[in-house]
Every structure is written in C-alpha cells, then in structure tokens.
Image 1 (cartoon, one colour):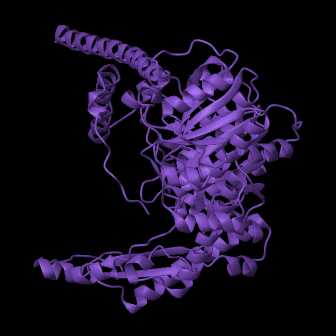
Image 2 (cartoon, rainbow, N blue to C red):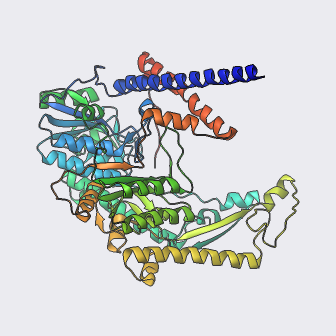
Image 3 (cartoon, rainbow, N blue to C red):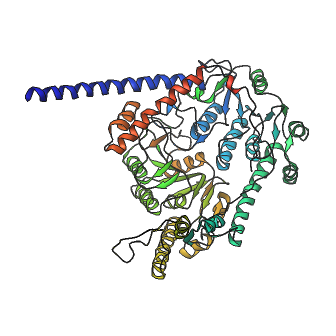
Length: 603
C-alpha cells in the first residue's frame, strides 16, 4: 500500500513538474510571439523596424485603431494589435514635442477610435506639438462616407495640413443623437415595464415606458447636443481659420467629394497615404517612426510608469460592478470593479512615494452599491492625506460621477458627458408574453414579498409604495454625496440634478466640475495639491500594481478553484489560437485585402 501511495505521489509530482515546465515555456513563447507581432505592427511602410531615432524623424500614428482608457493587461503584448492605450498616444506626442530630433508627424485620422472628450485632449497636445515649431499632417482615406465624418474632421482640423485620398469624401454633416424606444415592441410581446425614476431627466428607463422623448428629456438632449455642436464648430473654425457662421454653412452644405472639399479649403491636398508620408519625410529630412516604437527607443514604452513615482494613477473604466475585475492576463478588463478599485486605492495610500492620486474615470455608471464602495475608498484616501484629483474622459455620469464626488478637484473636458445625478430601477412583468406562448407558471414561496422582484406579477400597491421609498432613499443619498463633496446645499444640488446629463462646460458652470482640461490638467492640480514644484516632471505610477508576465499567467491559471473557474482558465488557454491566427496573418501575403470596402451610412 505504501509503495502504491509513493507511486501516486510520484505521478502527481511528475505532472506538477510538467505543468510548471509547460507554463514556463508558454510564457516565454507568448513573449516571443508578442515581440514578433509587436515588431510587425510598429514597422514602417518598408516593413523594417526602426533601430534608432535620428534627426529628421517623423512620428506616425494610426488613430483609426481603437483607443482604450483601460490599463493594458500583463500579457497584453500578445494581443496588443487591437487597441492603443490613450495615455500611450498622449505620451508619444508630448515626448516627441520636446525631442529636437522629431520634426513632425503623420496621423491617419479618417475615422478615429476616440470619443469627443478624448479628441479634445488629443487636439490640445497636437496644438502644443505644433507650437514647438513642428509640423503635423492628418490623412484620411475618407472622412466618413455619407455621414460620420464630423468627429474625425474635428480632430484633423487641429493639424497643419489635411490630406484626403482621391476617391475619399468629407462627410461633414453635423451631429445627431437618435434614441430607440421599445414600448411598442414590449406591448406586442405582452411585457409591461414597471420602473421608478428619481430625476425628471433620468432617461434610462423611458425607452421602455414611452414611444418618444418626453418634453423634459427633449429639452435636456437639445441642450447637450447644441453644447457639443458649438464646441465642434468653434474648434474647426479655429483650426481652419474660419468664422463660426462659415463653419455652420459648410456643415449644412455637406457631405463633400474630395474635389469639393479641396475647393472649399476644407482639405489641403488630394493624395494617398504614401504621398503624404513622402512629403513629410522630405520636409523633415528623415524617416518615419511609429509612435509605439518611438517610445520604446526613447525608454518610455509604457508612457505612464516609472520607479519611485510621485503620483498614483487609478483608472475606473466601464460599467461599475461589484467584486473584482477578471484576472485574465491576456485581455483588458471591461468594467470598473469595486473590490479591484478599493485595492488600488489601498495600495496607493500605503505607497510612501505616492504624494497624490489621479483618478481617471471613463464610466456611464452602474451599481449603486458598488459605486458607494468605490466612493468610500476615494474618501479614505483623502482622509489618509493623499489628495485625489479626478480626470474625466468621455463619460463620467451617474455612478461615474458618484465616485468622483469625494475628490479634491474634478477635471473634465468641455465635451465630457457627466452629471446624470439620479436613479432608476424596476422590473419587466412578462405575464402577457407567457400567456401568448402558452407557458404557465406555478409558485411556492414563504414571505409576503418573496416574489416582489419576480417578473410574473406586477407590484402590489404595498410593494410599489415600498419600492418607491427605497428609490427615494437612493436618490437622496446621491444628492447628499454630491452636496458633501462639492460643498453645496442639498437643495442646490437637486436643482441641477434630476438625472440631467451635462457636458463638461455646462457642468463647470453649475459647480459640478472644477476645471476644464485633460489628464495634463489633472496632473498639474495633483502636483499642486501634493506641494510638488511646478517644473518637476510628473511620473505616474498605475495601481493596482502590475504583475510580471510569469506571475500574471500563474495566477490566472493556478489561482482558481472549482470547475467553473477551471473552464474559464481553459478558455483563456484557447485564446492561444488567436496568437497563431495573428502570426499567420502577419506573415502571409495580404491578397485578402484586395477588395473595396462596402459603403457605410453612419449617423
């Protein structure tokens, strides 16, 4: 029996050793594949990877790739061809702006992977780049087609020159917000929505309860759209040296063919990308270097990290949820998980090198309970003597604003969507649908309100009254959190709350935001709050602390329990198939791209 036991232990030991060896080889292999794919992505038109930054360098950036606010995952180098961290973009342009060897940049901007607030932040760093005596060319195969070109052109208008492909068009048509309503569909299906909303402008539930915008909702949306439109018009006018009236007339006359856009001086050249790049190289007297490669060559590949950092950087990106973010080391998290953010603040507070915290928020909101958990973490950081400065990206509304309220200062871009101080909750009653389908239900329960949240019956009058009371409490707490954080009277907050959504410039006028600007402005305020010298270089240290690739993979594979998690781990390993597909795509002839892209109609 002892011999049998030793054999079993020996077998398990062998399997354990083999698992360790395979995992180690896996990490090394992934790293090598990631390096190969990264080099393929950051190579120039010739396919060669730049080895150094010479005098006359021209920076190249592809804004048509999706841009993310989330921190890159530990093993993200394997799949990094999909997205570009926004902070990496900003870091590359700002660093190149102060580098005498870099003379200019060429940016693909026909369709941009950034929102309007990020576009404003990007425009600011581009204008600063130009102010240092460098040139900037924007290129687009097409700026939209029939529609969808206003946002990309807004970004391009910050450049010295705009290039457009001969077959391209300029879909400068304005902006619109189209909201679907599903009440008619629910009526046909026999589904009845029962929702409570606090704040007459809290529109999240009206798409299920109405067939069109209520007058209050229309007024709020009209104010929001006009605020954004006015800012876009002003930006294009400033970049192209046009009056507000001229820009509005041009927008109303769009879309334009390439020749029409050239004749109206909306673009400067009709030509191809290689021609724009050749023109930039001739002007600079050097070669092209991709932004990511430039950061690697200059020793700042991450763009945000440094040892012994003086400022912490914490990101809340996506829907606010309870628990912790997925530990998948291959892909970025798509939510703002409360427990993960609490850990991030706790680590930043305990780090003696961190003198202040920049809290970057890109979230439309989510769970009230999870928002309160994060709110508490922000407040505790302040109480521990670490100033917190919020930097809002494209959206920081509802719960996204809730978690910002304890901060020392709140910074937003003029087009940031924020506010939405209100709550809604409810359920769908599906009895009519089941009757239509011939499905019957029976229930066994204990407790008068055990089925209160169920969809098989509407609220009783007593349940409806109780549910309304709970919603009232949630709204009042939201108002109180804002009032305490913004040093305002609750009644004053209620007057500008009611679930209404504001742009950043509107929010500043109402005291919900302190300053207009991007991450740089938040860093400036964080340095001031930490009593750091103005001219001292700000080094941002991301939290929670990043794990090395080995730790990330081991934790993702071994730190699980239960068959459900084991299946999740197997799915992560299955993602290796994507590596092989990308490797094959990177090395195979690109004959599959020899076809015209179908025309798209965008709002």
